[in-house]
Amino acid sequence: MAQLWGGRFTKETDQLVYDFNASIGFDKKLCEQDIRGSIAHAQMLAKQKILTEKEGEDIVSGLQEILCDVKSKKLEITDEYEDIHSFVEENLTRRIGNAGKKLHTGRSRNDQVALDMKLYVRDEIDELDGRLKKLLETIENIMEKNLHTYMPGFTHLQKAQPVTLSHHMGAYFEMFKRDRGRMHDIYHRMNLCPLGSGALAGTTYPLDREYTASLLGFDGPTKNSMDSVSDRDYLIELLSALSTIMMHLSRFSEEIITWNTNEYQFVEIDDAYSTGSSIMPQKKNPDIAELVRGKTGRVYGALISVLTTMKGIPLAYNKDMQEDKEMVFDAIDTVKNCLQLFNGMLSTMNFRTDKMADSAKKGFTNATDAADYLVKKGIPFRDAHGIVGQLVLHCIEKQISLDDMTLVEYQAISPAFEDDIYEAISMKNCVERRNTIGAPGAQAMEAVIRENKLYLRKN
Ligand code: ARG
Image (cartoon, rainbow, N blue to C red; front, side):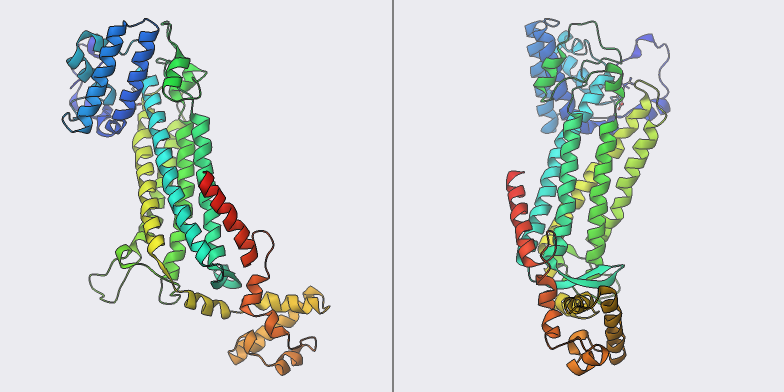
C-alpha cells in the first residue's frame, strides 16, 4: 500500500478499506492529463520562484520521462498505488529525489483531480466531435445521392405522406449537428482552470493562476476555490449531451432494424456489419443496430448516477465525487464506439430504393394531395377531406390505390375531378411540389445540402 497521507496515522489501513477507497483501477486513465497538469504547475511554481529553476526543470523532465515510460509500457501502473496522483508523485520522487517531493506545493489532490478530469473531458470532446462529424459526412453523402428516392414518411408508424430518403436522412443530419453544438457549448462553459484552488480555500503561496491556466489552454482560472474543487456540472452536462446522442443513435437504429425486416426490405445491412444465427441458417441479424439501441441504457444510467451522487454533497470536496469517473469514462467510451460502428454500418448499407418507392405508392400517401387538388378547384378543405375519405374507402374495398381509379369512379364521388387528377397525385408531384423551407422537394433539399456542405467545410 502506497499512500501520500500516512503521517498522522498510527495503524495500517485495513486492506478492505484500502481497496474500497483506492481509485487507481480506473483513474489510471488520467495518467497523461495528470502529468500535463503537473508540468504546468511546476513551471508556474518555478516562474513564481516558489521552486528554483533547477527544481522546476528536474520535475518537468522527470514527469516527461514517466509519461514516456508509461506509454512504451516500460513502467506499469499497478494497484500498489492508491490513485494516479500517488503513482506519478512517487515515481517522480524515486527518479529525481527531493525535488519530486516539492511538486505538490500549493496544490491538493482536490484541485488536481478537478483539473485532470477537465483536461480529459476536453480531449474526449474533441474526439467525440470528430466522430460526429464523420457520421454527418456519411449522412450528407446519402442525402446528395437520394434527392429523388421516394419513400413513405410515417406518423404513428402509419404511412402518412411521401418524402425522399434525402429528406429522411436530413432529419438525422439536424440532430447530430445539434449534438455537435452541445459539445461545443459544454467545452466553452467548462474551459476554466481549477488548479490553484488548493483543497478548498486557495493557498498562501503566490501562485499565478492566470499563467497555469494559459499554459494548459484554458480561457482563465475558475473564480471560487470551493466551487472549483466540487463542481461536476460539466460532467453532468456532458452525460446529458451523450445521452441525447445515444437517443438519436437509438432512434436511427430502431428505424434501420425495422427497415431491415422481411416486411419492409428498405435496406440490406452489409455482411461485415451483421451476424448470423447459430440455429436458423437463413438469418442475418442487425446486431450492431440492436446493440447501439441497447447501450443507450447504460449512458442514461451514467447520467442519473452522477446526478444522484452529486445531489446530497455539501461544499466542498467529498469522496463521493470519486464515483464520477467510472461513469464518465464508460459513457464516453460507449458513445465513441457506437458512433464509429454506427457510421461503418450506415456507410456500407444498401438502400433498396425500388422497395422504398413501391411502398410509398401504397398506403394512400398521396391522399392529402388529392384533397389539396379539390381545394384548388374551389372546394373548402374540410369538404375535400371528406370526399377523399370516400375515395380511400372505395379503394380499400377494391384493393387498389388512388392512382388506379378510373375518372368515372372519381367523378361518381365528386364531379370536381378532371383528368389532371392523375398528375396532381403522382408520386413525383406530391414530393417535388413541396418546396417550402425544410420540405422534401428537391429544390428545397438542394438548398439544405448546400448549407450542410458549407457547415461541414467550416466546422
Ligand atoms: N481519487 C480522488 C477522486 O477521484 C482524488 C481526490 C482525492 N482527494 C481527497 N481529498 N481524498 O476524487
